Length: 424
Image (cartoon, rainbow, N blue to C red; front, side, top):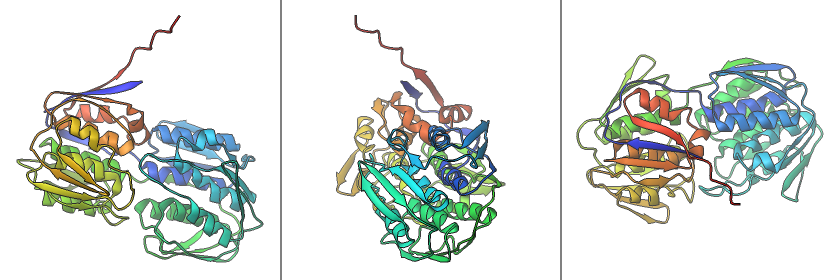
């Protein structure tokens, strides 16, 4: 198992380029199941979750080829409408094949995703919407078994905005008969990107990026060529890293327009954030000021940057209150940050951080994707040596993060543990 070893204290100076967005690429890959032919996607990040989804599409009968950051998917050969537990359990985004399969093949059998370390993410809103569109749903033996004729357009109102639910129903509605209206829909940039991809395929979707999305179903969709948007969460992580290390980073291919909530908080904390060319320059200097944060669906502060900001606020001057409204168990990084000297108290969905101006290196263990990033950032700014174990979480969402950081001055390396000797 790999570990990342960091010797903190170095300023990050130079340029870093942001990779394609995993959370945009995965639903695009699912959308190819609505077509027959070969779609090509550029700027695909090289991540564990992408590999898992490739394996899932191949299990369904598709053919997938990847050369560097270019991915080609031939979906005309898809015959198997079943996503097994062995694949779905490793990545909850696998549920995104549900809508496309039942829309195109009239049948889907997809394993329930199961538990999630950061909190419950039920799919009841997905199922409610598909039932409203005419699908018959049966849940047994840990699987969603769904059958349908051609789906029918319907008016669907989500109790709460759901990104994957909006994406799943938007894909299903693209091939449905009639008009589907999604109310209280998710507005994340990745949802907008998927709608743009579907429209390139021949769908008729309006209202993406607002609370109400209208989909006028069509008979068929065609394969496309598309370049994946940059990853706003990776960009935000590097922005925070520069701030924490008193760095001076030019972050290229940065979707700054999608990071308004973060930019506001960084500026409040005393960080210089300046658009420059196709990216942004982030300069951290002097003492970090404490700022309060409340996560919420887009365009609010992203829950996927909460852990990274918690690490930064541990070094701030003053008291910080972070309120997590999206997931009920997204403070698992706190116990590890405490090992590094952070003074954090948890009260329900609130973290109260008393900044002490410094962190100290320590052995820590990652518990999920964004918690992993927060520990790496803490290690960059800490005094001494930090060892982060279980970094396979990082590989789900950050493309070679240790190499990108090393290129801008971090003392960081990945090491592999020696295999354990077998007991005789």
